[in-house]
Amino acid sequence: MNGSSLLNKRNLLLLIVFVSMISVFAFVFSSINSQQTIAVKYKNISKVTIQKIGEGSRTLEKETIYKESGEKIKVSKGRYLLKYTGSDGYASDYENFDVANKPVYISLNPDYSDQRLSSILEGEFENIKTVLSTKYQNIGDYNIQKGKLYKKGQWYATTLQYDGDDMFNYDTLRLVMEKRGGVWQLVTDPPNIILGSKNYPNIPIDILRDVNNVQNTPFVEKYVDSNSKAYFP
Image 1 (cartoon, one colour):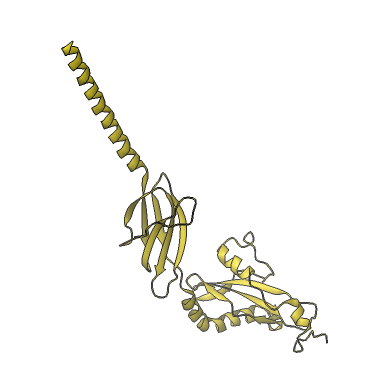
Image 2 (tube, rainbow, N blue to C red):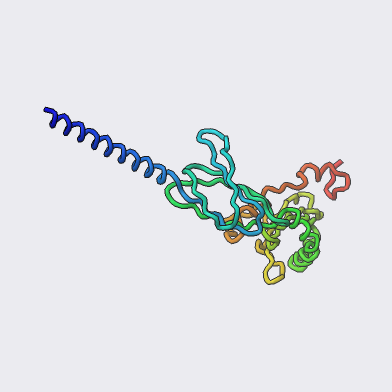
């Protein structure tokens, strides 16, 4: 009887130890499996941080700062906010991304800042107008708006506002140019009212979207402005 009782206690102890070990292994495996790696490689950036976004809300957990480019950080799975601060002359921005079952590798090389692009445009605008004047003989009927440079200064987009004698022509035309080999070339030929990605798949979509959203002088102002050639008193 005593021997049987001791055997049962021993078996029970072994069972408890076995179950405990299984529980520990399961916990460790679950912890490892719930984490994933985020590696961020960057240049022209002074600071990169990531923060986990709380589920079902916009709350953010404590931010983690990358100490160097290419550093790998282990995090729990979920949705994250990445923010970066560009070095002098480079843009700052942010993006959201998900961490699931595979490591996440992110490469960052920001565009020039708006201030830097505006400064570059000051020295490029006359060259751009010369190219357009050479290309189009009737460019004098349009006001060439200052427009904007994009990316690292190799893309340019602007609008042309009709200012000729045709009182029924009030179109705003849009165009995009690219600097290749140090020379500005027209990518959208001829300029058009709307520039679509289907016709111009090589132009970055954000540039097309931006220039398409530009609104110039409304139609009605052309007919109430006493300085307009189409003025109706």
